[in-house]
Image 1 (spheres, rainbow, N blue to C red):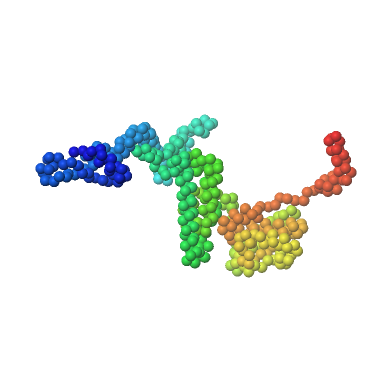
Image 2: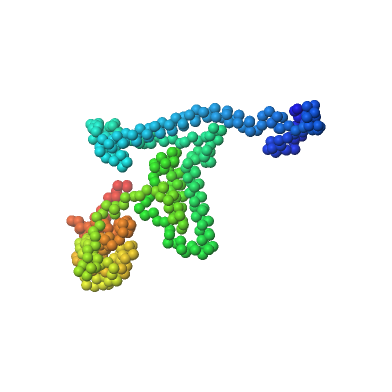
Length: 417
């Protein structure tokens, strides 16, 4: 027997909707059959018998209506995924066929081998390379799409969906959370007095740079503006400069790429060994009209000999600092012995010649990163500047006679008038 509207209104006024839904039993007027069976004047009935449609049922009906509206969207996403899976499968089969035709291992057959095989098997005389036969991975041919952004109930999967660029803002949020976690770990280390042990573990990404704007756009499958890319680089730099950034090395390397430096293309001469079994390296350098030849001995005591004299051969303190700069940059002060001979030119030219020869000789005793630092500092490049020659009809290279300067000034005044 159904409850009266008065009882229903009282329950609704006393209980919120969630409490009302949890209230599963209501008291009603007993029927004759209930009195006969139970011998009591009260009977209980489930709420589902009283109210024909509960909150959960309404939610399910709403979800069914939304899923009908989203059915086309879900079907498109499903069809795209199935199409990509089929294309990838056909690509792998074709790659194995090409490898077998060329007599190579299918497992190690990469994209360069595929292009070379197609160029050999299907030669084309078309000038436009994009019009020639080609075989690329489906992700390079078909633009990548995001996965389904909504569920069957119409709710977005990503918590940053309403920002418009969920992948980008989600990435920034992850970087910020990692930075906050490192701050918390740093605070704990300071409290325990163990921060001094972490100072030498700071991460330095030498030879790496952050992925470019185009790569980030492809990775996130979203249109990223230049301002947003700059913000992305800024937060990554902030994370990298943290004292505990080595804990997030794997994450940082995911968004960086190795750069081929110019020092990797240089041919580094191996150190020679003298009769005493000591390693040494020889090099030469030029600056203006000065020529220098130098021999650097590894595992030395820091002795310097220039034309039979020590560092006092150069009177100017700045020239001495220039000579010691390559040693300071690669941390070789008091660790090598130097024997140099230099002739021609003045003190400035001789300093530049000895420094250039010293930098080239040190490359045999240091690693690739140190060589790159020498190159970036300009110590491995010859300075092409020379004294400018005197011009005919002039006292010097640039100096003009006094009367010529006066005539030029008068001519300019006449033009103004």
